Length: 404
Image (cartoon, rainbow, N blue to C red; front, side, top):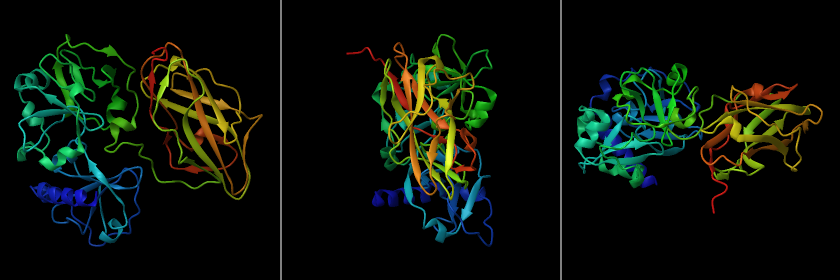
């Protein structure tokens, strides 16, 4: 991995050097000590200072390299949020892998190949069969949508950052792939393609997910039909973040600290008709005094109808349930678990792990589900709550429970 990252930095030095210095902000004479914060864009004043390699600080507080200027531009329109940091501080940050080009209207080509690809979520590449297919899907000027178009495509070394997915190969009669933002001809409504369905995007969600007008594929013929998915109404980490995972603001300190458990449930398939499936696990840590937690408000995300979630409950580390099984999620995609008569007791200086479980309607056969704590106020107690919010569990896939 270290050898690969070294090669990546060399590639970045070459590609970023092509005109980037002219648009980079000036470096302050004296830089303050830097502590990594998830979501930051940083550039070291030492490594590559003449060329401008930029890194993204992800939720694991590692630095992920934008290996080319075009890759960066697929995510951000400018460098207004960039932070210059001292080389000494940069050296203390663990390195992640490379950021890949954003899914959607952005296309990629590699320097050693004439094949054009659409980028789908998860760094998947959907090969475009020929120029006729590219024109049919992305318009006559499709080549200008290519990441690093001006230098003939991404360096071939970076192909290893992606996965070529033969299941989404595109021809002239294909639908637009997952991750695409589009508008039908004659309509101003914008949609996001996910799991082969179209999700209407609200104005707030368009901005919150850092989508941009130049990503929209316009004049899509109405003959290209999709099943309607749930509307996209707020920020979703899988769409907005250059690196998978939830970006959280700085940790706040409180008398009760909440954090994601190290053994938080991994992403799995949840069959329709199943019950008590763990989807989120957090750790509650008390400070100098005992704390009684009397409620937990959960936020739901993912592509599944609220009515397909028939039960949500909370258990502590001993397996004891607190409160009743909540049977519905409201129109704000929230559910409030109440258990004031049987609180979760966290004694001073100690921790209690709590797990959120869900029941899924038998007829639910597809979709995704993710539950999380939106803010410190999601935890009901008399103490001051601290932590790094929002805290999200992993995304779970709903599958047909009647299948053999």
